[in-house]
Length: 88
Image 1: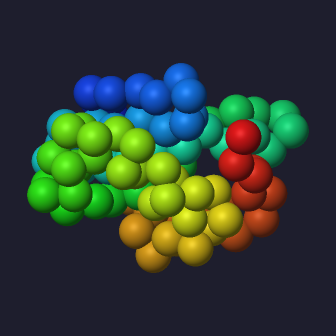
Image 2: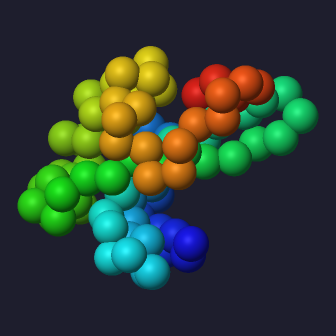
């Protein structure tokens, strides 16, 4: 998988982009397990991606839901069964 970030918010700590192989759009958040830092990628529809790109602050609530693991059904790469990190 090749994730291509198109926008990064330093203020709210999320990225928006497109996975090149599948064409899926995503919002990603940084995560840390204590031993490794990584990103979790949540699939979003193109219309949502476009709205978030036009007004990045409109993505903050969605990003917060991802941090609380409320949007796990949208994970592009499933979370590990054990040792999952926590949002940064």
